[in-house]
Image 1 (cartoon, rainbow, N blue to C red):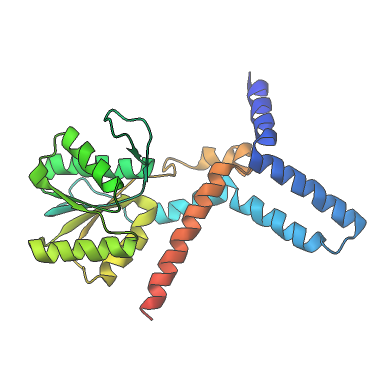
Image 2: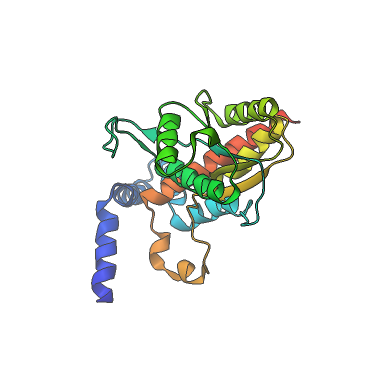
Length: 254
C-alpha cells in the first residue's frame, strides 16, 4: 500500500505545474552545463530560486516565524473587536440572493470576531472594502450579532488605512482598547501599522493559521516535504510580502 501511495505522490508531482516546470528546468540545466553554454549560470540560478521558493519546508519556516510572533490568549480583553478585511469573491453562489462570499482568510477572521463578541459582548468593527464589508455585515446579522454592535468601515484599501480608520473610530466613539483580529501571518505588520497610526494600547487576536504547530520531527522526515509545490510557492509569496511590508514600515521610522 505504501508503494502505491509513494508512486501516486511522485506521479502527481510530475504532472502538476510546479513539479513539471522544476523537472524540465533541472533537465535543461544539465544540458546547458554539458554543452558549456553561457546561459547555464542564469538558468541554474532561476531553477534554484524556484525550487527554494516552492519548497514546503522553507515556506513553512518563513510563514511560521510570522505566525508565532503573536499567540492569542483566551483571556483577551478590550472594548472593541477590530476585524481587518482580507478580500471577498463577487458573484459566487450563496444562501442569499445577491450572492458573493468572503475569502477563506476573511471568513476565518470574521468567525473568530463573532465568537469573541459572543463572549465579551462588545461591538465589532469590520474595516475593508465594499462588497466585502457588506457581506461581513450580512453574515454577522445572520449569526445573531445585533445591528447596534456592528460598525462598518468600507473605505480602507490597505492595512495602513485599516489602522488609521480604526484609530479614528476609537477616538470619535471613545473606545480605549480595541482587539485586533487578523490572520496570524499578517499580525506583525498590522501591529506596526496601528502603532504608526498612534495607537499603543490594543490587544491582538491572531487567527487563520496556515502552518502546523504540532511536533515538526515527523514533518521533517517526510521525503515529499522537499519536493516543490504550488501551495508552498503561495506561502512563500505570502511570507515575503509580509516581510517586505514590515521592512518598509520599519524604514519609515528611521
